[in-house]
Amino acid sequence: MPFYAYILISSKSGNYYFGHCQNLSIRLSQHNSGKVKSTKNRRPWFLHYNEEFHTKSEAYKREQFFKSLDGRKWLYEKEILKRTD
Image (cartoon, rainbow, N blue to C red; front, side, top):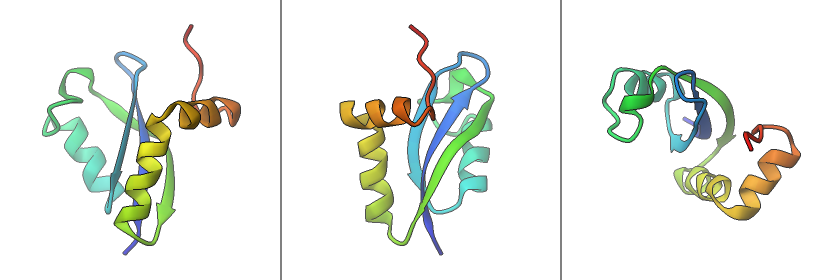
């Protein structure tokens, strides 16, 4: 079964959330049901972007890249994220 690095967007705040998981539909459901402490107050969440990987390690590394300065720059250049400033 594949693993995913994903980006969610909050329709309440417009903020992004970066994560990784093995099952996107279950994980999105967890975010929207309030089971994830860090996203609970900004529900509902929608899947904005995802990439598929063969291993959990690869998905985790991609999540960390998304959170890095270089990763944010790449996401903006590819117009995956929109600047709010």
